[in-house]
Amino acid sequence: MERIDSFYQKCDGSYYVFIGTGISLISKLIAVLLFLQIDPTFNIFSNYISDLGDGPNNSDIVYNIGVMLSGIFYCFFFLYLMRYLQKRDGNLKLTIVSFFAGFIASIGAILVGIFTADNAPQLHRLAANFSFFGNFFALIFFGLSEYYITDIPKKLSILGFIFAPLSFLFLSFYFLLSINPNFSRELTVFIEWIAFFANTTWLIAQGIYTLKSKEKL
Figure (tube, helix red, strand yellow):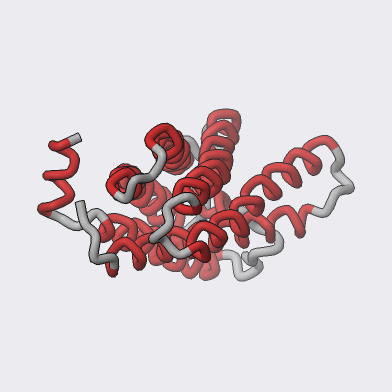
């Protein structure tokens, strides 16, 4: 653990989440703009986020590179957040479980960029499940870790409790759609986008708090 702490003392671990979210948001924006040049019907009610991974006009390249890079940076941030909370007397087992949930989500994101929906549909769905389930549990467990640390604002942990169900809701809707074609596809797609933006907001909030915190590793 000392080597991990020494690493983050040289470069504040908070920066990794800002780099990761920056890459994620910018790459998706560019990919959407490229996609729209060929297919102007693209929107958040009819197109899954992963549609960008097989999109035209090089939108696929931009999206897949972006999602893989952001996943790598998120891995480093989740490790930092684990150590940050442990230094604040966070529960050891709970923070470790939190990290592994975040790590699984990050690996899932990386695999989503490698295995696209068109080229490897089964592996893509598996990777997406890793990503969304990982995000769900990461927000829950990190939220619990923070809730029991007295000097961390409760609103930070509550934010995780509020946003976490969105990832699970999307997976539930996606499953319902797979067994019942009459279930609302538009709602399912929209919830995926909402879950993505909610998770991104949570990550940025964590980064801002840890960056401004007087306590460092």
